Image 1 (spheres, rainbow, N blue to C red):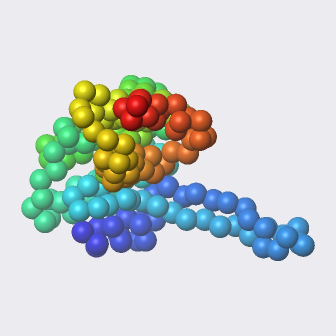
Image 2: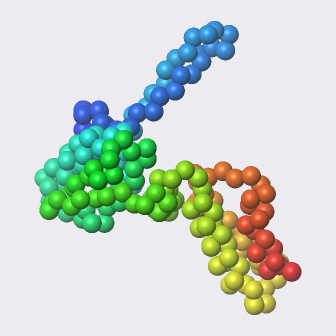
Length: 193
């Protein structure tokens, strides 16, 4: 898999480039440009391709299709998902084609979350999808203990060792004010009374 990732990132120079003007010295008015190009995020058999345009994305997909065909790897385009942020193409042209046979992959609805290694993202700005997921997870957890004879020490242990690590993982890309967490945790606190 490394040869494919290397070719896309370094030989073809495809991917999304993020740039930042950063001061070299606070006493000087000179800024230095920091930039990084990222074409992929891969873990085991879970791969996300990142591209600044439809053309760039289709080029990455075409190269990866060649690699997969060469290595006798079947990719199911029907299981693939596409997120488009700040589209510059018309809605009818907003798709990529991948796999063998070619499958047209269209973007999800703007508010529909996509799960990447247990963390959810949407095309739409905001965190409504995460709020909904967290609220559901906490309510489900608290319902388990509503009618159970459980003492505060047991509830604390389960909350700290099961619920909080799950929430921390799901919220890796989300930062909220303390009062938001307090509101979400009210069902847990009511279990302890």
